[in-house]
Length: 285
Image 1 (cartoon, rainbow, N blue to C red):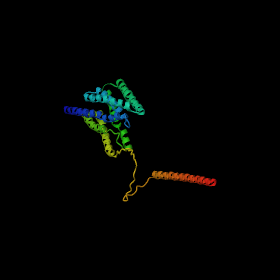
Image 2: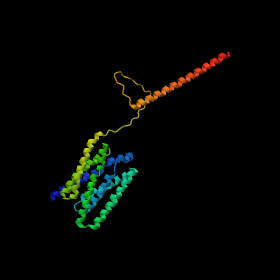
Image 3: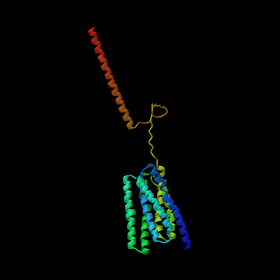
């Protein structure tokens, strides 16, 4: 029992360290958002759900014993996730901002408030801890399921531009640490959700490896050509013209032809005038 307790402490400390990195891993994402002054295709759901999960785990830890390591890391997580959500709200467009506010009201205000009221007034003692533990288990699963929206976007667009790969890697490692921590403490509410977290983490890394090389950004290059010179090489074939180029050439030809006709008619009129003038001069003479 003492040995398992020591190992539980070791995995708990390792879980704190890795989870600390997990909470900091979105910093490059938000640094990009700050530079572009826009959230672009990024979503706020993972950060709102993570914030709600941290609040639940702190509540659960206060109802249990030997859970100091849960309190420390989730307190830090609650602080950093609040900062992330605040930054997202500041730089998000109106539609995304409204959606994020609705999520916050639904989960952090309404959901967490309802859980506190129900468990405090309807349950007591060990049962209260079990109920809160089950709720924590469900929402921990939501934390790992939340990135599935990004996974769907990656599969649909075949682009990993908006997949935070660092977050996926550290979530996978964190899931391993907290699984063993919960297993050694014989707490299924801690161990069980991390199994799914490990599976989803591996899935995201596989998708990143599949689509990372397929990201070929299109660069618009405006080339200004002055006094173009066309050189034809006898050894090379002239490239085939597209339909649009052929249409442009036909239009240009029509314009040139119409211009020649107008010039010819003008010249004929001028010549006729000169003949008339000559005839008049002859008659007068």
